[in-house]
Amino acid sequence: MTIQVRPADLADALAIADIYNQGIEDRVATFETRLRTAEDVAAWFDGVHPNVVAENDGKVIAFASTSTYRPRDCYKGIAEASVYVARNARCRGAGRAVLQALITACERAGYWKLVSRVFPENVASRKLIGSLGFREVGVYQKHGQLDGVWRDVIIVERLLIGCENIPATADLAAAIGSAASHELTKALDRIKHCLEQLTDEQIWHRPSKSMNSIGNLILHLCGNLHQWIVAGVGGEQDVRQRPKEFSERGPISKVELVRHLDEVVAQAHDALKKSSAQDLLRPRCIQGFDVNGLEAIFDSVPHFRGHTQEIIHMTRSLLGDAYKFAWVPSTPQEGA
Image (cartoon, rainbow, N blue to C red; front, side):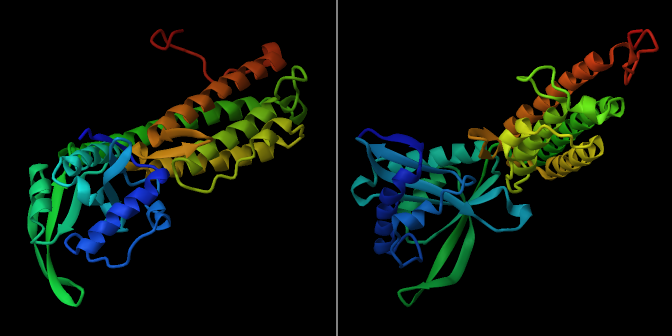
């Protein structure tokens, strides 16, 4: 048997359901008694919890999945883990392969612990998970009834790589969010400094028909920052209408532009402040791109700074010698 392991996707839902239903029917792996459909399994793919499958000759023969342990924020780094193998593929290494792959995927996703429950008589599962570092914590007696019979369960857990550095990881996540916020604040100040020197007419001046005005660039920055940081990282609804950022001809007053920009930057600050290490590593899709939270920050903040420099250049071109610099070096150390 040649076993190949890969991340699961929606196309695997029916095969996963079939294997899970075998586990339900065997009555040694779960308290569940209702057989599952592909639609039931599709709900597992929430973009947060890793799921993997093992294949042989292109057919799914095993899967390992994760789900929410508890809804409280303090448990966000813990996931419930499950492993199921098709009857005709058991005792051939598929269970070990998918569980090992799941452990690796969860480490990469920022989880610090996996937990599960096992029936005491499920010797094969206890042996498998024990060989991969799971610890039997204790026994829940009479934890539930299965077919009218009380069953005990063994609680198991596995700490993941890096869990001993959780405080340092949290500090690093906070430092990244703080640095990103600081960069946004500096850029916002530079933009405001430019707008203070311009009239509404100058703000909406286009150097040519094919080029954007400063007003368009500000709308564009608001749209991008909201989509990538406020919604993409912070989880708010994505309401961006990108074409309107460039089709607008104004004049929207600079007072209104500044108010809007202040509002979006403040929302971005809030999203960055609340982001945990797990949030920064969690994959998501933003503007059609598959990225994690950290990649979203490194995309949007430099984008904001880049257009800020463009606004500064356009302001200097409009004002010439009348342009007032926001900062001028005054000491040798500063570069005077």
